[in-house]
Image 1 (cartoon, rainbow, N blue to C red):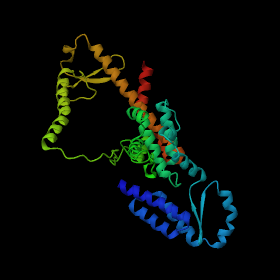
Image 2: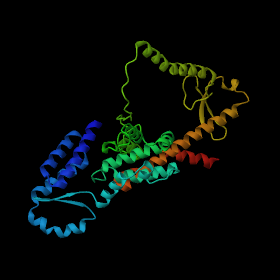
Image 3: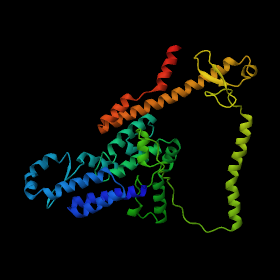
Amino acid sequence: MDGNKDESERCIEIAQKCIAQGLREKAVKFLQKAERLYPSKRAKVLLESLSKNGSSVGSHQTKSGQNEKQKERDQSQTENKENGEIKVEYTQEQMEAVKKIKKCKDYYEILGVSKDSSEIELKKAYRKLALQFHPDKNHAPGATEAFKAIGNAFAVLSDPEKKQRYDQYGSEDEITVRRRRYRHHHHHHDDDDWDFTRGFEGDISAEELFNMFFGGGMPTGRVHVHRQHRPHRRQQTQTDASYAYMIQLLPILVLVVLSLLSSQLIQAPPYTFQPKGQFTEERRTFNLDVKYYVKRDFLKEFQGRVREVDRMVEEEYVGNLRNQCWKEQNYKENLFYKAKYFSDRKLHEKAMNLGTPSCDTLRRLYNQG
């Protein structure tokens, strides 16, 4: 399905170029093909624009609208045809923003942040740009590629390990290009130029990253793993293959043995927050009155250490509440951002009515203390 989506977006880009060249029928064919592959709002908008303006707007309307076109040039990109006027719904400012992203030299420049930027600054920069370049919001040619580039940049710079590798070696595409140029004795080839949208250096697509970040749900399973193309090697003998297979299995066997040993050495907590198995006796902590469950012989086994267990229960309980409260607040804040940017009244109402039960519980506990 993802392949259909990418092909659909490519057809839309071709259709927009046809519109600019005045090839209306060809543009309609590509837009209809895009709709068959993967229905989208961009294709529908362009098709509606072509059907409305292509047959009803005559040469008289084209001449009378010439004075208005000069005034609207900074607000929208206007295309002319022999049989009418076709208006593509994107602004000159959006087009310039797309060109700016394409000229960027690295991920830091794409997001507009420095190398020592904090996690909060990265998220803030990504939130602003992702909303600005989302295909449903920005219909300018190349906006989809810019959106993917922004997702790539955030996926790498927000991951400490990937960020460290990127700072040291550059992106995977940059490394590939340098190797190609080295093999070709430093001769430059146009097809060797890298772009920041080739593949995806995160573990999910740019669209799924956007949905997760703005409360659109978890990934739907369409996961794109970024793989490097490696040269083919000669087949090894059967003995060497078997030896390599055993070497690969060795770390797994070691992990299995260590997990078995650790399960015997590490003692499980003497309590649970829900009744299960042998943990059937209900108790409450002395300070915060947190409910938990223990085994029947708890008092005998932990004689003199009951307060210590109470403290462990309360620390874990409050820690869980803090983590859950942070998730609730972050989700609600992202809904507000998305509703405001897309002018979505229903989404704004949903954000307003969205509760934060963990935060409420945490406040009550602090008030008791």
